[in-house]
Image (cartoon, rainbow, N blue to C red; front, side, top):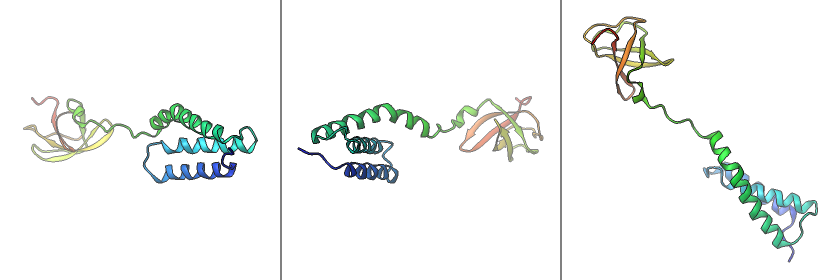
Length: 148
C-alpha cells in the first residue's frame, strides 16, 4: 500500500498550523501539523515510502512533539496570574495629594497609582506614609501610619 504524496502531507501540515492560529486550541493542533510536515519532508527525501510507515511516523512524531514542546509553549505564553489585591492590606501607601477624612484621592502602592479613601479621622498629606487597611474592589482604604 502506497501512502499519501509528500505534498499532501505538507499541505495538511500547513492547514493544521493555520487551524491552530484560527482557533483557541491551547497549543494542541499545531503539533499534528508539525508531525505531518515532518512526514512530508521525510517522504520527499525518500526516507519513508510505505503508507503504514507514514501514518505510524505521523502519529509517533505528533505525540512526541506534543509531549516535549506543549508545556514549554504554554508556560511561555501563559498570562501572568492576576494581582491578588487583598494582599495589599498592610502595605505602604503614599498619597499623591492631601486627602481629607472620608474623601477619595490617589495613592501610590508598589509603584502603581490607586484610588484610595482616607478612613482615618485626620487628614493625610502629600508624601505622608500611610497603610492600606481595606480593599473594596479597586478602592483602597488608607490611614496615616501614626493614626490608630
